[in-house]
Structures are given as C-alpha cells and as structure tokens.
Amino acid sequence: MFEYLNGYIVDINPKYIVLDVNGVGYLIYVSDPYRYNVDLDNLQKIYVHQVVTDSFQMIYGFYSKTDKTIFEKLINVSGIGPKSALAILVRNDHKELLNAINTENVTFLTKFPGVGKKTAKQIILDLKGKLDDIYPNDVENETEKVTVDSTETNVELKDALEALIALGYTKTNVEKVKKVLSKETKMSTDEYLSAGLKILM
Image 1 (cartoon, rainbow, N blue to C red):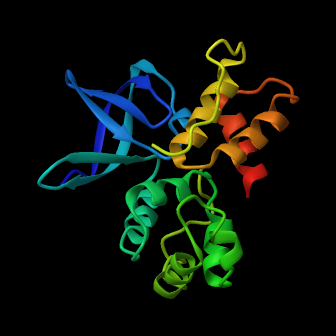
Image 2: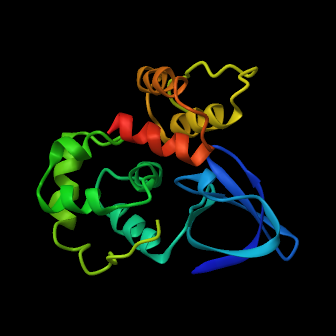
C-alpha cells in the first residue's frame, strides 16, 4: 500500500489529476483537482489511498496527510463510499465539518452529495470526538447532467462547474451556482469552486 507519491503533475481533469512518477502516469482521484497546478519542473508530493478489488484498482489522492486520515475515517462509516468522502473533503478547511460532527449537526452534513439523514447520523455516531486529535489548528489551506457550454469563454468557471458535477451535485444546484458566479468578477478555477461550495452549503 502506498503512503504517498512524488512526481510531476502533467494533467488536471474535473475528477482527477495525472501524476508522472519516473515515466509512469498515475491517474489519481482527488477532491479538488484545481487546487493543484500542472508543473513539469517541481516534484509534488501527493498522499494516496489505494483501493484494489477483483475488478478494478483506484488511487485517491490528498493534499495533506490530515486529508488522507479524515478520508480513511469517513470511508469506514457505513453508507460512505470514496466518492462521497471526496465530496465531503472538497472544502480545504475542515473545521466546519468537525464542528458539525461534534455538535450533531445533521442538516449541515446532509448538504453533501450522497449523504442522507441516516448516513449523517451514522457519521456522527462513528466519528464524534474521534477527529479532534488528527486535525491541526493551522491546516493549510455519472449523475444528472448540467449544461456547461463548451464555447464558454470563462474557462475557469466552466472547469469549476464540471468539478461540482464530478462531485455529485445535482443539475439544479449547479445551475444555481452558475447563475450567481457568472455575475462575479473573474476568478481562478479553485476560487470559483470554493465560492460555489459556499453557495451550496
């Protein structure tokens, strides 16, 4: 089992990044691909969790070891799969998540794609008080289709909307984000994604 991979990021997709490690391209699913940059000059460390079954192998990547630890705690909760766990982790600052778990805020947790009331209660039951020691005080910071115009001149917004689709947000939710963010001053893809998540949450 891999702990992390050091390599060069050569491609970014709404669902994943591709990390070149000594000439081998690893497709790595991450919560926010646009947190990374294509960089062929500087090695980057990606913490990883590998899932191997009889029918497939998948690698999930994380910006920090803390993110990886929270992901592994989440996927051990009944009803939470890797895709849902990545959607929960997409916000870079997890303090609200931990606070929601510790204060039994079911409403907050059910705002994440794939998390219903039953699953939210299970998250609270399994993880309440169990993430406090792994979260530092200084953390660095196919579903319903939505129409994303391929001729959209705002490529950053288009990529952010596609990332929300990849995370499992519904057509109605993503259209709502598009309507609001299209009126804002142009931002980076990661900033659009963060702003979109604030609207949805």
